[in-house]
Length: 228
Image 1 (cartoon, rainbow, N blue to C red):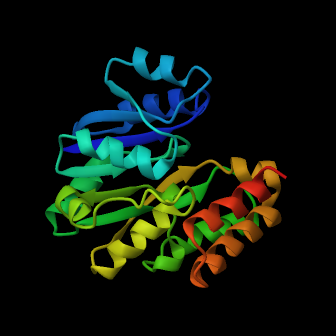
Image 2: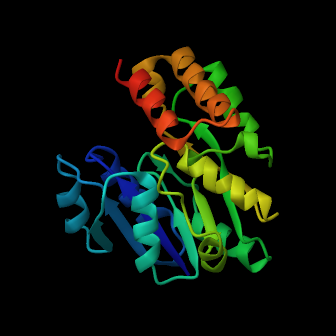
């Protein structure tokens, strides 16, 4: 069985769609839905609390902190971290359980955007490749609890790039697979900033990390660019 952990902050528009989809597209292998709220100021908390199958908890803001908080209370041996604006494929839970039963301790889905743009389509295509440079949090992440605990979870110093930092450590253990089904994620940041400005930002973050930038430096650069 699977514990789904969804970190949220002001997701009143996306969360209802996701919860409805999870209920309709799962195949009965979900033991719990944990929504971890980082202090939303909209109706996110109300939406989560009103859903009969959601366990709602609050946390300090920051996806790494929120995901670790959810993992601590999760009851299943399979943890599945999912962004509120990413919609997994049909029967995603069975696909994950099958991979774990086959000995794969961690992995994600291929990803496509909900926006038809040639560059975003190309980026989605490359998520088929099982290489760290093709990974990101929007592809979601399943991981065996034992391995998650062994790696001590997400590094809470990171407020951006937290998924990539943890996935890199998973790759270092030799435990990672890409499931050949598509998760669909929102292109809302690309819509806000423009495709090329957003892609440039991600490349800047990637190279700054490669050159030794601290978690704080990465966050400051991201925040400055997104809010400029």
